[in-house]
Image 1 (cartoon, rainbow, N blue to C red):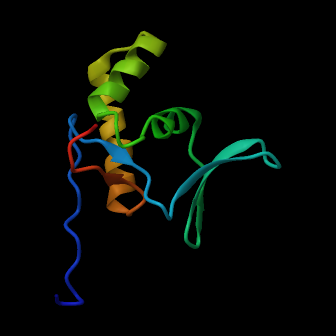
Image 2: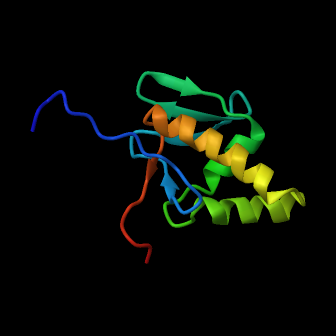
Length: 106
């Protein structure tokens, strides 16, 4: 395999099942009293809604399932939530902070 070959960028859709890769951790920082995303040589500080979305990214739930949970919790328009979720998750996937599960769920 050519060493310059790269994995294709995942294109997320409602049926995608996102999960954080092993090298990326979502942790609560007690000292700063906020959630952070730890990645090699990086620390990201997501907002509260992003944290809720990321906590649901377990590789089992599809993005459409995440949207349904959030739409019920916030009594909000699922289409708007899906648009925002896809934008957030696609941005993280583009930076290799998020993967999608490709094999069938159990």
